[in-house]
Image (cartoon, rainbow, N blue to C red; front, side, top):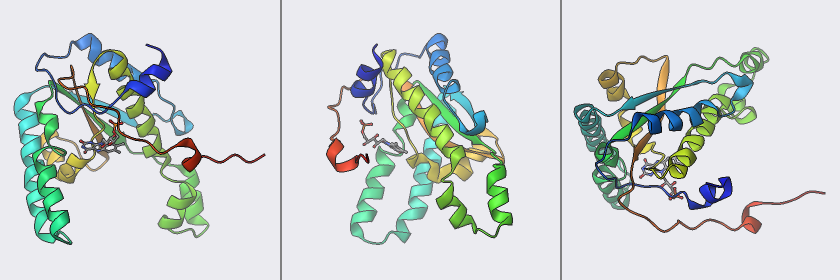
Length: 210
Ligand SMILES: Cc1cc2nc3c(=O)[nH]c(=O)nc-3n(C[C@H](O)[C@H](O)[C@H](O)COP(=O)(O)O)c2cc1C
């Protein structure tokens, strides 16, 4: 598939056929992530492929419980309704996919950040000067994997909603504070073909100088 066709044709897929995803397909998707650019070529990512239904159910249960803990703190009725709806689908549909890739951000010790801190910049100022190169690197890997999925005829969706249960995921998947899941990518053959969602026009978001 042509790259521009893949970019234009990819949509988030939230309903999947039950067929397992062959290992060769998973490996090609992971390899697309592996080849992404990263700050200082540090490659601050790792990938965990989860196909165990019991593990996926435990993760989705943890998300539902986390949302239940959040609901009493909502700011208004609208937010409460939206969160309750997210619990049913937007945050938890990953459990229906035949495979889920957990994309981790590994520790990224940026020496330039240490230097700025020694010069007296606060953590907030440093974040504005150098907006999270580690996470930007992981995001590049995620987008590569989404495009690879689409080019291979598979569907996926970039998911950060479920990460409200990150503390439970640590226990379920057995990882420590040295890293965290930056996104979940459910993968499977699409059982839906949604229309592309609208985008802002180029004139709204782009300017040229010179
Ligand atoms: C950082 C990020 C987090 C997202 N988290 C979720 C999520 O938790 N659940 C979900 O259903 N979609 C999630 N999405 C998908 C967006 O809703 C989707 O990309 C957007 O509406 C545009 O639609 P498209 O992907 O079909 O072009 C996320 C997308 C991004 C980039």
